[in-house]
Image (cartoon, rainbow, N blue to C red; front, side, top):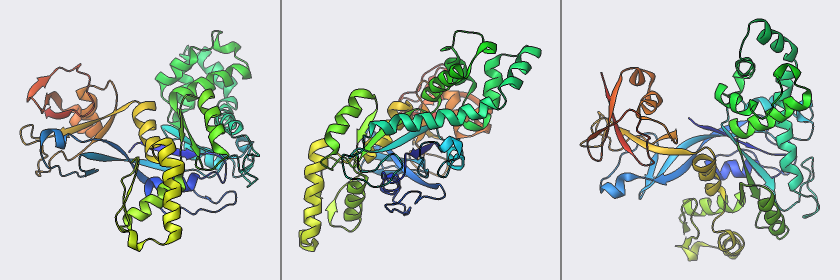
Length: 395
């Protein structure tokens, strides 16, 4: 399952975001390092299901479908708050940087209201500049990787020279436990023009900054966007950084809980909600719902939580959703489940890639693939499209 890390300094709403995205019960409190061990749980990204277009009723196995909205599982990792100097062991240190190893992307939670200082301690709203927190986290992760390389750098250089190895392969081998690929190392290495044996520390850090952009891209979630001091900070964040989503994790959690209780009609990511049992709402609940509507939904279009999940998977990681079936006529698996699986796969993938994604044996026995909509064979170099329904034919 695709893994995404929820990161940031303490007390910015990481666990609230995690809870609202996964409906988990990670502990939330207003003091640093509430999260002592990384929490993991399943969240869902939402994509259009072909069931409506094809006028059929689907039977998902590993995902959910709600009136044509397919909810596809991804794993979120709620990392304990990082503070400046974490790569040197400050706070809870490298233990939590290590939790980031297998994550394919970071969702960086920022307190857009400026009500937590650089160490994650509560302060007067607006007192801290949240833009400072973006660069700090990227620097901590870069320096974590730098420490991995630096301690063996001279040995790596000697090995590459004596064995006449491609230095990119040597670096990739050293970083093999971080989820970074050889292709990403090769691309990042292009930013340094000098020979690797002449690289200084500054060159290594520059290379790693580029490598992180390629291998573990980051989405900034400007949390607490409903607070008065957040609006101007969000504008500044969006002017400086490409991927910034205003959000209120507490608002999303409140709407989901109200929906579960049958008080309102709401689906994650919706721009509005409908009160269906007003007689069961007390005045404080009505006030809270009106506050969410005025300060999040009307202002930003949604609470930002579901938008952030979809943004990181479909836009930043450039994934598409493909629906594999065994029977191209009935669009089902061998047990009769219609459109049983929704597979997240990188844009540009080919049918054989899908086969390997389903199972190694299927990939190895792959012969060709059929477009289940037309029942026609597709070429081996066909680039899969979002919402494709594909039948893999094996020997």
